Length: 196
Length: 343
Image (cartoon, rainbow over all chains, first blue to last red; front, side):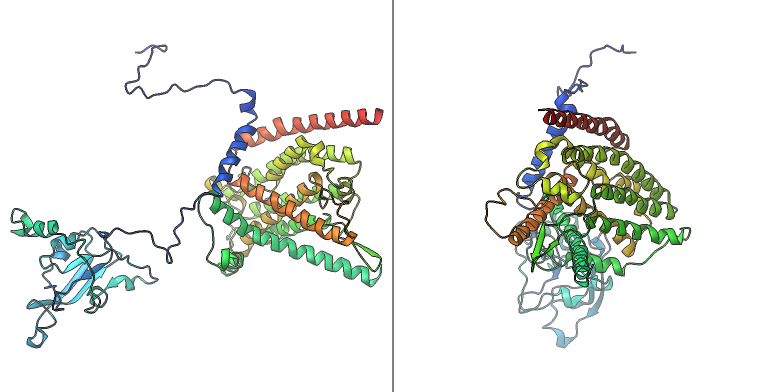
C-alpha cells in the first residue's frame, strides 16, 4: 500500500496540484469577480452574432454536399435509371423503394434502358444522406445534390416520388462536382468487388 | 372631493395600471432580446420588426393552451394563487411618485395615485403578502416539486425581507419620513441617496433580486432541479399570470430602487434649465422611466451573468452577510446623523 505522503509522479507532466489555499478578503467578497463577469457579458452585447437567419440567409454549402437526391437524365433527355434495385439494396436506412416496368416501343425517347422505374420513392425521413445509393448505381442515375430537403408539416409529404426526384429536361442539375474522374474510375475499377 | 378630482384619480390610476402591464409585456421581449445578445444570438425577430409583436404572440399562445388542472388539486386555492400574485404585483404602483405635479388652470395635480405618509411601510406590507400567491399556488398544486418551490420561496422571502427593511431603515433615518414623495423631494437635483448610502443601495439591490425571485436567487422556480418549482402544475394563462407578475415585480422593484436611491424624477440641473413647472415635471417623468429601464436592464444583465445560488449559500448570504451589513449600515448612519446634529 502506498503511504499517504508518497509523492505522485505525473506521467504526462500536465497534471496540476489542486490548490486549497484560503481565499483573500477581496476574493471572499466576490464583488470584483462579479464585476468582471458583468464586463464579460456586457462585451458580448456588441459581438458579432452567430445566428444565420435561415430562410433568407443560408450558410455556405459545399458543392459536394450530400443533400436531396436527383434522378439524372442522359444527354438526350432519357431517364438513366433502369430499376435494378442496387440503390435500394445498398441503402442502410432502407429508404428507397421502386417498381420496375418494361419500356414500350413508343417510349424509346423517355427511357434509356429497356427496363425502367415506373415508381421510384425515397423516404426523406429515413434517408441518412450517406451517398451509398449513388455509389451503388451502375447507370450514373442517382446523385446527391447540394440542395437541402425542406421542412414540412406532414410525414407523408416526405416520401419523394419521381415527380420531385427526376431532373426536369429544361433545368438540368449539375452534379459534375460529385461525379469527378476519380469517382468514375473507381466505379469502373474491376479490382473493386462491386464492379465484377 | 369633487367630480373633477375623482376623474383625475381614475385616469391616473388607469394610466399607471396600463403602463405597468405594457412595460411588463415588453420587458419579456426585452429580456429575450438581451438573453440572445448576451449569448451571441439575435433573439426573437420574426413577429414584426425587431419582434415587436412577440409579446402579443406569446400572450395569445398562453390563452390558447390547454387549461390543465391536476385532479388532486384544491380547485379554489389553485385559481386563487396566480390571481393573488397578479393582484399584489399591481398594488405597489399606487404609492410610487411617477412624477412631480402638473398645474392645470391653477390646480395642482400630483402624479402619484396615493401619497400616503407610510408609503415605505405600505410597500413592505404588500411585498410580504406577495409570498402568499406563490405559497398558495405551490400548496394547491398537490405536487412535491411545487411544494418544495413554495417552501423555498417562503423562507427566501422572509430571510431577505429582513435585510431589505434594515437597508431601508437607514434611508428613513436620513430623511426622517416614511412618505415616498417626501423621500423623493429631499433628493432634489443631484442630492441622490446613493451618494450617502452606497452600502445600503447594494444591500437593497441584492435583496430586490431575491424578493423578485430573479436569478441568481431564482431557487423557487429553478428549472433544473424543480421543473419550474411552484408553477410546475400550472398551464395556460394561470402560468402566464405567474410569469407576468414576475415582470411587473421587476418593474416595480426598479421603480423603488430609482425612487429610494436615485432621486426618482429628480435630475441634475433641473433648476437651471429655466423651464416651466409642467415642463420640468414632464422631463422628470421621462428621466424616471429612463432610470427604471436602466435597472430593468440590470435585472436582466444579472440574470444572464450569475449562476444560481445553492440553497445553503442563499441562506448564509442572507442571514450571515446581508443582515449584519445592514445593521452596521444603520449604526454608521446613526453615528453620522448624530455628528451632524451636534456640530
